[in-house]
Length: 198
Image (cartoon, rainbow, N blue to C red; front, side, top):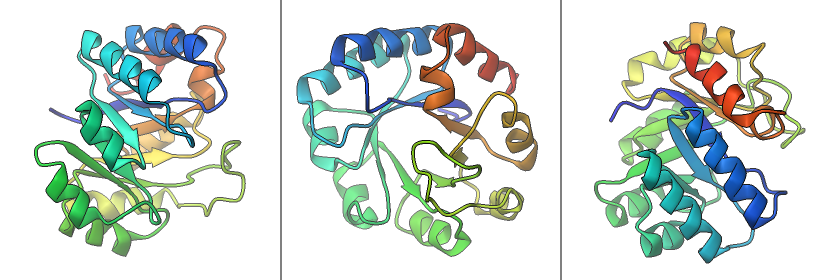
């Protein structure tokens, strides 16, 4: 499957019922990939999100939790620098997606791909309300990373207004939380992002 388009990441704030309604709207809007992200594990909620993803044929990635991804039979896992060993995650998640946060560092991306990552994420590309103190990744990183041969995700402060420059710079996936899930019409916003990749 080609990883290209809007990469929706669930917001931390919403209660379960509200979250599931928001996720359904995003799926109906045509997202390419969905990441379930919760600081505190909520297995039943994660299972419901995964079920929704299956209904719409969209892969669901679990953030930072290899055990939960295996337990639920999720489509993969995304790991940051402190979230566990990529080599060991790759072995345990054979045939599943493995994504890695690489911040502003091409060397980290190379190492992640060597360890078996299917896609790498750079960011924060813009100032982010979710992680205000995150290191900033320059747009030039995307053209430099093209040679790595895997899909490139951009994350951090992405809006519909600044997204076109990321696509032009070479991002395959736009990882978005606030600009998608805080939108007055989530389904419409997701489809607007989708058009950037048409």
